[in-house]
Amino acid sequence: MILEMTGLSKAYDRGKSPFFAVKDVSLRLDAGDFVCIAGPSGSGKSTLLGMAAGLVSPTQGQVCFQGQDYRCQSDEERSVVRNQGIGYIMQGPSLLPNFTVLQNVLLPYYLLPPLKRSADPPVERASLLLEQVGMLPLASQYPAELSGGELRRAAIARSLLLSPRLVIADEPTGDLDEGNTQEVMQLFSRLAREGAALLVVTHDRAPLRYGKHLYCLKAGVLSAA
Ligand SMILES: Nc1ncnc2c1ncn2[C@@H]1O[C@H](COP(=O)(O)OP(=O)(O)O)[C@@H](O)[C@H]1O
Ligand SMILES: [Mg+2]
Image (cartoon, rainbow, N blue to C red; front, side, top):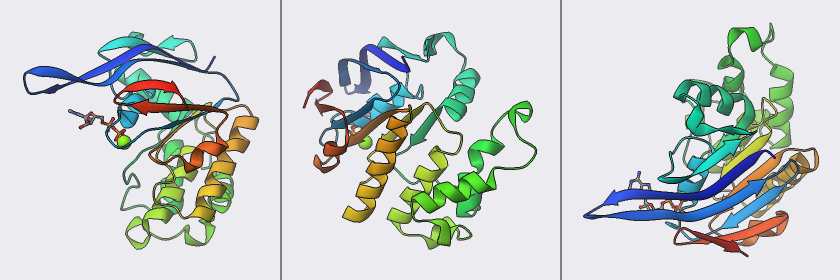
């Protein structure tokens, strides 16, 4: 078992009464699982993924990543777990503007505790990942010089640098054309075959065909697609 979410709900303050963005969601991912969740804007997708990554604390329910309950870990412990064990592709822009594409992809290495770091940064692996998402020719560019789709593909390469057991992707193909969507989803399929767990959300249903376990999220409620 890689990720286990049990009875998860998240309420935000909105006016007088709390507003539940996610309602009683339970989901379990084992090694090799490729889960796709489709849901319209505002259905709770990003909130659910935030809880899966330990970035958003649930109002109810619990999340265990590799057998560890996030509630039993400090913020710092969760950050360490997230950097090494989870590749999180955020919905919005997430590259650091003052670093090149290659330096951005190497970021998870620089965030490792010194004892876990190899002597040299894994430039070869970063380059291979950039090649797999068609971004190697742009490795020396800065984020301001890239299109939305290029930024997204660089963020995908960065999320995979440390070979995470779990990849969480928030609308990873939202700004990609059909060819790039296909390549990214095929890359995810291969990672799942190699034993990672994939949790991907999208607002459109097209990428669903790549997943193995399909769900819909509507007004915070998860159901089989
Ligand atoms: N930090 C927050 N505070 C208050 N309301 C929020 C917050 N984050 C999200 N929401 C609300 O929760 C609902 C679900 O948001 P979100 O999880 O971002 O949905 P999705 O990713 O599916 O578009 C939306 O109605 C949004 O306005
Ligand atoms: Mg979202």
